[in-house]
Image (cartoon, rainbow, N blue to C red; front, side):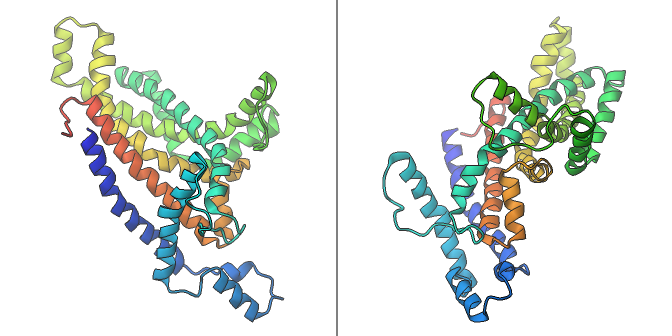
Length: 335
């Protein structure tokens, strides 16, 4: 298993380098101008000097190599310096935001906790709701519960997050006044009362994101459970006198979880994408709002870095899904 993980990590390095090249070329070839936000009163020669200061006067391959070195070599050194109080990165140029003139990774680290709170909680809630509903819907196929679950799932699939977000704000915040419509990122939890405030402001963003997660995983869970419930090994297990709970929750569920694990792992970057819209609706000062602001300001280093982080998430969770396969299915061996 360790050999397989190490081999996959080595293979992921050229994959990530190629992805970074594609991201860099797509963003740099797009029609954008970081000087577009500069006032018209600034003389052209000053604008030219500002372009040179940002490194825009250099060839594309030079800009790409510099960004690659900063991302893969200098930023890890910054992390090592922070963890062990060393000075490997002292005096070295990091990935700098054109908009704020500060290191991009510092901004991401500052905003990441807010995004992880909302996204992580919504994903866990969505999975915990979807799996039991999918199991019971498959076991009670065509029942009233199954029909209602299918209807709610179709709504979760069909309705986009920006509409769901506005809808719950109108109902629970404007009409009923139960929940705050804006997420206060400066709020800190110090006692029970502040914890209740934090819980109340997280309900709507988590609910909006969890709806999509629940809809997708529920349908996959139901489909795989139905496929396995009709297999020969299920009839054999029942013929041996095993209890229905043991047959369904141990034998059938374990085999059914294999394709669902793929969906759960590969949907993590997608849920971050949904968080971009949700953070805009609820004013969560997280990664999504930073990405939207960077796009508006033509801040290419920030957009490139955040997009590349999503690519890293996809590669890592692919590896995680393959590892869990070996745990769930004894037929799979990586040695």
